[in-house]
Length: 181
Image (cartoon, rainbow, N blue to C red; front, side, top):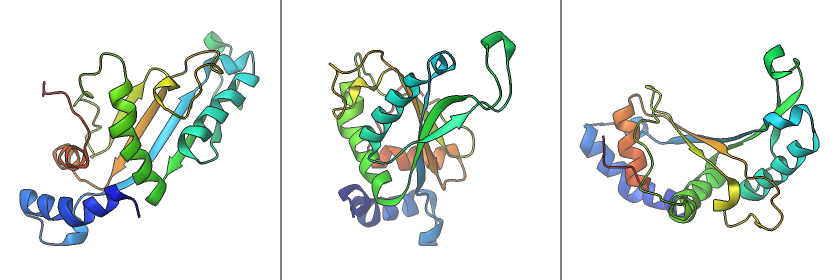
């Protein structure tokens, strides 16, 4: 297993049990999955743009992305139902922990003017979402081959019941939150 998962089992579970007075080890909050989503709005005119986004996402995650299609037609955006407009990857288990480890220790420190991630990205049910403005912060991406910077949303789904539990879990796993809470 990954070094982050080993640290979670040996150090973080006992700390969280003590902090939230949880008797059962299985009730301790843990990571469930990480979903990385790349929306490509320009794919309406040029479908090849989705292929480059898909290739970048596959390189970053080590897993083949799934294409997401429009659920309904919106005439203001010239969008028809069923047109491919995004791609996403769902990471679980070993790949999830390895991706989270790389995200926290390599990728986020490479973001320009980085002062920590916003503590306001929680959804009320213990899940956290953050957005990155371009894919160049990932070391796997060759910046000479990128024609257009493309952002992505990263959603971290936890088994925590509250945002406070999820924030404690992510902080102990190494997520660098901004101090202004």
